[in-house]
Image 1 (cartoon, helix red, strand yellow):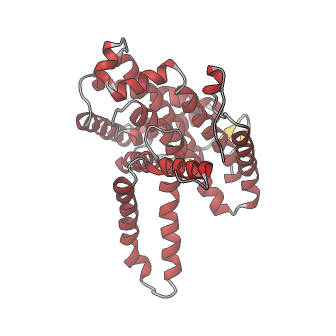
Image 2: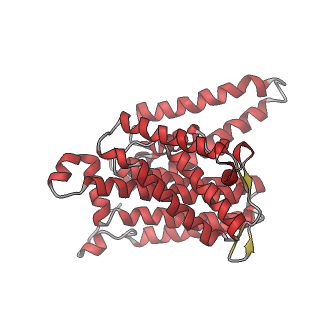
Length: 347
């Protein structure tokens, strides 16, 4: 049973991995990620790449909503900006992922800062409506700016590469997406240890008090929008490189709701929450789809009859988390760890 953690310096107290046990488990986790693509099926490798992209995007939204308390329904539109920018740079400028993705993230961050301008005057539901309006405007641009976006037909990515390596398989994309997802999560974790991260949390908890204490609300709100949008733009670029085609229907309003639900289910304001939420939101529909396929031999019309049921079950799971575990799956994981630390005594 763990009885205490003795730390004598601030750096050791703020360390990401505070015990040797945590370092060992992280080493096992990294080794598992490295061996996974060589023992998995093509389908599970495909899902792993989707989960990695979802983790990056959900982590970015968590910075805005979970850490800074700014509601956003424009995340899908920001991903679309990153995807279209990356594809255009790759096809027209000959840039690989190493250049097109950061540039797509920076352009998306600039768009996010512009969208975040109303955040100083409005908050809550009004800010959600403002960001949703921005998503609608971006979708309109995707449809009608045909010389750049290709209109409803979309555009294809012809030059999917990084450092001259052709990204023509899910295996190669896996070793691009997963390291970037780890970097994104570590970036959010380190953000919490900085002055900027503490300012974000102060704005979330009590923005008026934070302003009285000297926190520049406009600066940090816009910084949060920009950083969140940068994550979304990078995730959108990876999505474009993964599927090699982008259309206006690739990032509808449902995408924004998807990621908002992911951080709610996973646990807003935590580092682990977006990871668990992204895994949950990506895999549960696939599991329900597999269960439906199992019933098809018994009930030939099961695909038609149970297709709406999948949506109902999926929504019921989300509502169940909101009702019975509002702090998300991250809190469930914390309770499990606390129980194992104190066992056999009661928590």
